[in-house]
Image 1 (cartoon, rainbow, N blue to C red):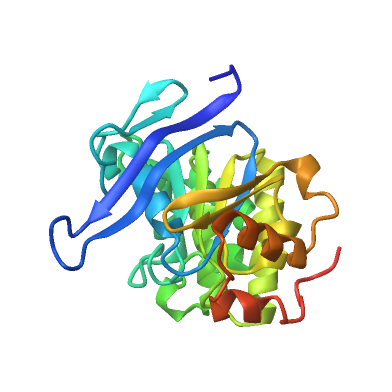
Image 2: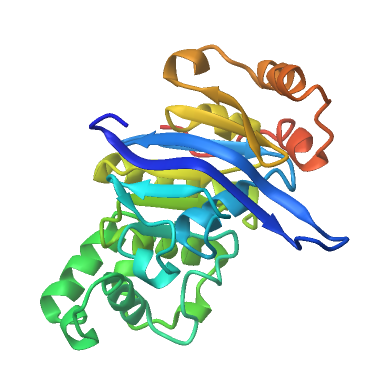
Length: 280
C-alpha cells in the first residue's frame, strides 16, 4: 500500500446460502487498491457482484473469513454499517431509499450532516447550518434552496436523487458509493443527475466508486474502470488504458478475460441508447 491508498480490499470474498441449493459465491477473492482522488466506474452484468462489493465496503455484511478491508490503513472488516458511516456516503438506485419522505428538505439535510458525528439535531439545524445547506442546494440549480420546508415526498425522482447526492457528500466522507443511482430515472433526468454527480465529485475533490450498467457512462466518467464477472474483477483500466477505448473494445476485453460472450441485455441495450446528458 502506498501513501496515497485510501481503501484496500485483500482477498475479499462473500458467499450466500452456504451449504444449500441456493449457494452463491457473490465475490471471489477480490483484491483492489483505491487511491485518494480516484473516480472509479464499475460495470458488469446482473449477478456480477457489483452491488455486493458496495454492500461489503459499506458494512452491510462482513467479508468471509480471511478477507480484509482497510481504510487509510485501518482494518474496518468487522465494523458495523453504522460505525462505518463516518467513512462512506452512499446514493442508492431507488431515489426513495436515501431520503426521508415524511421530513422536509431542511430536516433531511440536518440528518445527513449528523452522519458519523455526535452532534444533536438542534445543532445540525442551526441558522448557520441551514444557511450552508441552502448554499449547497443552490449548486444543483433546481431551486431546492428555496423550498427548505417542502416535504421530500412531494419531490420528483430526479429532485430526490439530486438531494440524496448532496446529503451523501455533506459530511465530506472518505469515499462516495454510487449504486446505479440513475437506473430508475428517465434518460433526460439521468443525464442531469450524472452531470451533477461529476460536478460535485470534482468540486469537492472526492474519491468515488460508481456502479453503472451503461458502458458509455463507464468509459466517459471517472479515471478508472473496473469490469466484474462472476464475483471477480476481470478488467481494470486506468486513465492511460481507457484513452481511445470504445464500447466494442470493452466487449472484446470481456470476452477475452471471461471466455464468454456478454449476454446481459440491459448492458447491451444501454450502449444503443442516445446519450442525452447535458453538454458543457
